[in-house]
Amino acid sequence: MKNLFRTRHLLKSILLIAIMAIASQSSGQQAKPSSSGYAPVNGIKVYYEVYGEGRPIILLHGAFMTINTNWGQLIPELSKTRKVIAIELQGHGHTPYSDRDLSHAALARDVEGVMDYLKIDSADVAGFSFGGAIAYEFAIQSPKRLRNLVIISATYKSTGWLPVVGDAFKKMKPEFFANTPMKTAYDAVAPDKTKWTKFLEQMIAYAAVPFNLGEANISKITAPVLIISGDNDGLDKIELIKTYQLLGGAVSADLGTMPKSQLAIVPSQGHVTLMMQTTTILNYLNNFLK
Image 1 (cartoon, rainbow, N blue to C red):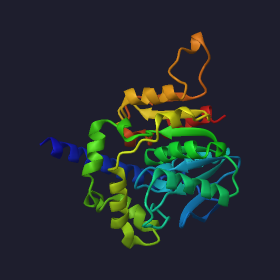
Image 2 (image 1 turned 90 degrees about the vertical axis):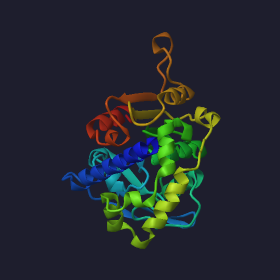
Image 3 (image 1 turned 180 degrees about the vertical axis):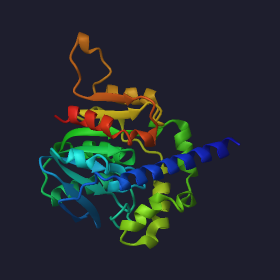
């Protein structure tokens, strides 16, 4: 009975993601990229879109999502003052499915490869969920290419999620995604729509494997980090505070100095609804990325 309850909650979460996809795609505020294309990196072709001018910020989407379904509401505002480079990671959206093994390290190297292709020396990097974990890995392996790091509802280790979330990852099945707007979004842009099930199987298997990028590595991140989390987004808040401590936060600034990294907990938000709080997230980003 407990397993059935948890599976239903997983399905509810997927439906919420689908609703977010519809909201993003139907927005009249969508911007058109000034350029887009494929960067040949590490044996695959990674799709990117570029918007606006200014200091570059790279956006990394959540699992099973596309640029538009994750960032469609934020890009028009961010691109008013910045050069926005949005990337679709291996198998997602326009980026073709590949049999290449998924790993945080490989995906982070892909991000650096896109930067090389676009001749970007350094950038701010923001990632949501799955993309946030890749952003952490990028900070670890490419510190000289990073200016500021924004982590939205993500963790650097699988035990950073509540146990119920880990259990849900293990119970995901491709059929959960059938007839959803996520499938529709994939079909609209994927170069080979027949790879949908293989893509899901690859991502589900990847999500089920425990990972830990290492406390020592997180503590060595020198770039300022902004962590944004919903108060009920599935992250273990005890572990989240420990992460913030590794980054120099959770101190008494009145008795010392204010840390360069920041932590924002948005009230009454889950994992998916957090990304719908466009104004709130935009305000945090603008204040942090001055």
